[in-house]
Amino acid sequence: MIEWQTLYEEMLTSIERCRQLPLSEIEQIEVSFNKIPLDHWGKLKKKLALHQFVNANEEIDFYKNIKPKFTCFLEYLPIIYLALSFLPANDSELQKYFWIEESGKLQKFVEKNMDFVNYYRNGSCNYDNQYFLPANYDLACFTVSKIYDMDGEFMTSHDHLVANLFAQEMYYEYVKNKLEMF
Image (cartoon, rainbow, N blue to C red; front, side):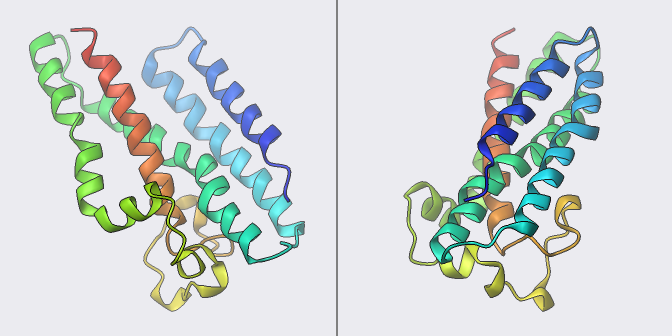
């Protein structure tokens, strides 16, 4: 299996270091988003290009569980950046209302993707071959154009949904922390 755990921990450490910089929160996001997750996903892709999966189960595990741990940050950090960009300035009542509205994004994502979210959260695997094997993803039906998957080489039809689910869950926790300040 690809050695990914060390690379993942390095990414988390680097992101945390950015959060400790004496910058505004939005500047911290800019620094961490512009470089860290994209670089680490790129390093993992290089390892992946040299790796031969032992079997379909190992490949499914990679796209179902490992890749989304990296790419979720490429989804999560822009969500925060966008929120902070639209956060009403100097009005705590409007800010509280803003964060209350933002707290519903996870539920909206779950409702929109209910079948898949239930499938994933319940640990189902009966569609894993279809959802998480690149060989079964028809690029003619290419509908996901994420910056980190533009080459189309290391993607499946559903790994981006797992990454988005993780990102929305992290964002929900972030918003809860913001609301606790009121």
